[in-house]
Every structure is written in C-alpha cells, then in structure tokens.
Image (cartoon, rainbow, N blue to C red):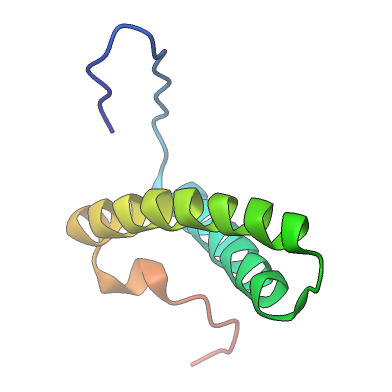
Length: 84
C-alpha cells in the first residue's frame, strides 16, 4: 500500500505465506469482533469508535486478501484446522 502524501510515513514488511496467513486470520477475527460490537453495543460512542475502526480494518483486510490471493492462491484464506 503506497501513500503519496508527504505527511504520512510508510512501513513495509516482507512476509512468507504462513506469516501472512496468521495476520489475515487475526485481522478477520478482529473484524468479526468489531462488527459484533457495532451491532449489539448500546453505547453510541463505543459503536461510533468501533465503526470507524471497522471501516479502516476492512480496507486493510481487503487489500491484504487481494494481494495474498494473487501471490499465494485462494488457499491462503482457508483457516480451517481440520486435517484432510
């Protein structure tokens, strides 16, 4: 992800397939938690804050998933722990 404005700093990582899969899985779990909070919490401030975080997280997760599938294939999004 490239940010072209000079007021933003940029950070990059080189990840292998298993490292990227762990990150995508953890972010997917966080996305579910934030979505759950947004749909059930009665505190409007908490919902607004979680909603903002959820938007940012979904943008990041979409970017990561798209690029991960392009490089490693669809199986990188399979988080099943069951054996074949």
